[in-house]
Image: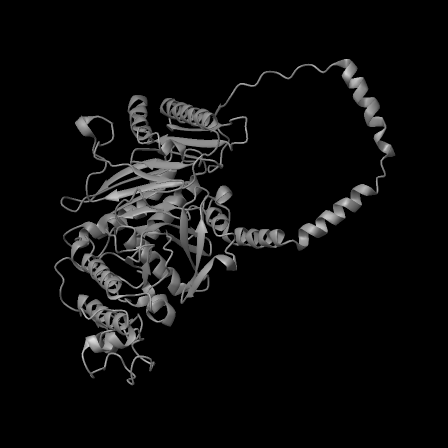
Length: 590
């Protein structure tokens, strides 16, 4: 059996970008040597597990690979590790570095870790994993819902399933691997579980490692319909769909009493009754079925269903493929609040991307309003499948904004990447973008100076955070009114980080690029003409944005607020005069 071994959304953390000094050439050579030998060592192992230490100090590389316990085919295991290494090494290294000095991959069919730090070291000279190995978690966005008593019973059964799966995995030699299923006997879906440790752990150490992870499932998160919790030496996962290839090894559920024997008299009566059914005109059945099918085929509901089914067939089903074969998402660090959504979840939330839910259309795709079953409203950015540049921006936005937290930056809740579908899920902001208010006559009349000042200050705070206070130091490169979203209280939030660039904390110099991207009219002259950009490029865009906010006029091509053509070249009078013409309700505080 040949298996497509690259999971659709790699839970992959490339930590080399956080290394303060450039990686030595010897380190990169050693990583290449590990990539060449570790796949074969893993696939040739009876338990599909291998570790290696390669090189001489200070350029030593430590690595570990493990295939999932039900991947029994040697070739499939080796291909998974090799393909994962290839994808890791193909990623662009951080600035000033020749390669990434560490990568952690928590995947579907295999797991891969390498680092210049000793990730194979054990605390207190035991086989117990290092206590500093911080768990990585991914939670299903949906909760179990229903009657309180039913929920308590389901959560209890699920906890019993996880505990038994952990115990079975710890005692399962030599692979330290177990799977299970919980069937509630009600309308609740079954829950499938999986737990695995590296085979070199003892039974006691494996159980201790997995129980530590179980401890992260608190009373609130226990309601979630799925989760993955990982450290290097062990992990467990549960979902309401089958996500592994083998049959469950154990079952948990309510015991059902045997069905009572049928009453002979009742059976005889039932047979006499059934013998009379021939008198019903059999032609009524096909006629009724035909009428129902005609109604169903032409109904709006069925059209939406066919559209959604086509989308699901195109995007693939995570329930059966576990997102195999998709592009990878790569980001530095760990973010427990970031969620990888299933495409079907997004499809249902947006009513199959209906036109009624469409908020707008951008250069790289459409934006839709949606709502999850728990009532959470979302904005869904669906990248056009034909846009290769769009996917580059998609990865860039995930890598950046998932780690940026500020009240004046839009919050990215998660993403979805399956086959051709590349989707970003944001918090929903009801007042759309700033351009809806600034450039519209009726809406602009509602904007007095105090509201404008709050918006301008909020944008400035968000920009200052990107340039100075965030740990990544980001140049946005596309600051304009349509990329400023407004929440319910008209607070601004900077959005759309697809074109953003990271620069080092001590880098105040200019950078040069051959690919000038952004929106003309907001670009600094040196960037538009020569590709030279720095934080001053964003400051220039901010200045143009402020002029547009004050004047109510686009930076070029309009005659609304005076007789000039180009807002940037306006020289007649001061800003107060410009503002007074377009905002009659504004005060003269400027």
